[in-house]
Image (cartoon, rainbow, N blue to C red):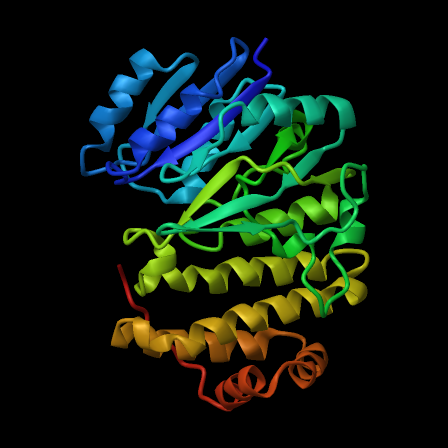
Length: 326
């Protein structure tokens, strides 16, 4: 029986994939499988993965005929996974040796639906530890209780899919798949769904994932139309939270997070192509009008003046948006 399935999407990461694969080799075990999803790469990544399929114990190579984005690639891996537990890694990140066996041992001991872990963010030569915003460590908690308070960073804001491990029962319950086709912010509806609907989780101070920031090909560095998928992602968060039995309690947090991300993009709008910048303003103005207005007013009153000012100015804009295609 496969104990752990590791799902690793790759797309045009020829410079980083060798380090990623080397770190996977340092985490092999006879009951681990590594599902390598080539999302229709156009560089030398397919050749690198073909060698890995032969040389990495437990490797399973899957190729997409068309590029579908990170969410779709992860879903492909989930559908192929056979493990009792599942986890994720991105094709330009890497692991500490022996990290996955430690993570599996913690999951065996705690027996919860999912575990969230700290990670190391790497920007050039700089290293910084980022921690799960949860003070209680190594104990099983109710994930719904970790969504609030609305005005502080909580576990639901720590959306990195690769910073944790997930029990197969979440797949069986339909909670682990990502929204097909989302090209950025794909982890936001996903983490909210886990925290609303899963039954148990834990946070650990186990460090083992090295998250590479500043990669030129990463969507976090590219100001094109794909970045606007955050609107669709957070619309989904709002829509699903509105159907929750505790919607009145949870909605301020969902709206506040949406507004914070929107204000962030508006604050760096100069990095977008001009046509995309115009669409960002129009789509954001329309999104603000779709939000529950009483909650939105409270949220903007509680935000700092700079971010609230951006949103208030946008709220007064016309909402017609022209479509920009990739």
